[in-house]
Image (cartoon, rainbow, N blue to C red; front, side, top):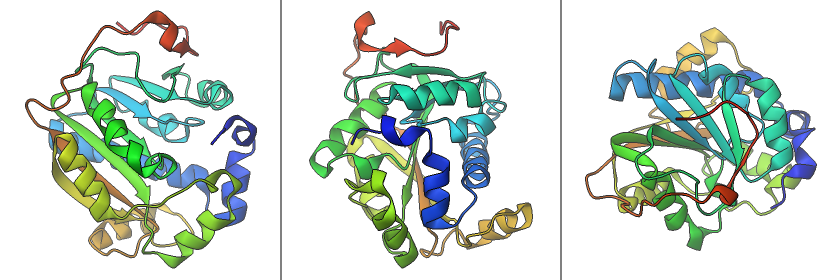
Amino acid sequence: MEFDPFAQNYVGAVEAAAGVPVEKLAGEKGRLVRRVLSQTLGSSANLRVLDLGCGIGLIDRELEHGVGELVGADVSLRSLQLAGARAPKTRFLQYDGTRLPFVGETFDAVFASCVLHHVPPPARPDFLAEMLRVLRRGGIALVIEHNPRNPVTRHVVSRCAFDADAVLLTCRETVGLLDSGGATVAGRRYIGFLPFRHAAVEHAERALGWLPAGAQYCVWGRKRAGASRRARTPSHDMAKNISPAPFD
């Protein structure tokens, strides 16, 4: 799927199809990621984090203020240009969708939000392997995905042009991918139970995280020793930096 044509109007398209405030929901996801990292790795303030498939940087705007360093990677150049304006503290780069331009064990945490359903099922193990390759041993891999058990979610996905290639996967399938890829699953929760978003709703929904009725779900795991050891020095022509700040 080519995402450049959808980047400019992404927020409006999702809100028209789903009837949810996209920016607010993305902010909640950023806070969820930060809570998971704080609970599993200690304070998130000094962590090096990668947003894999970052799109237009919706989550990054919230998350960049709560971690040490944040990098966003995506295949869509236009999305990354918009992301750079939305989250100026984050470094964004374009990659080829296959191999990330980082040596192994570069990051403390890597997350992918609503990306896997665009990856063809046969290619998903390789996607997870690459995700885990750049994650340090003991680091956290986190996946947020649409919940296909929610009929409203299925309806919304069917209405979005940029989801034409989507093949949704259940929470159980995501758990299996993380586990087979080399991450010991440490937690899971469902999110997005109501279409309207408010701080009180966000707080109340934390108690419902066990209920498989949310519009989306989140699964996270800790990288095991010996997982995804295919590390090498990246070639400089593999990625195009969108943000000029160095990442040492």
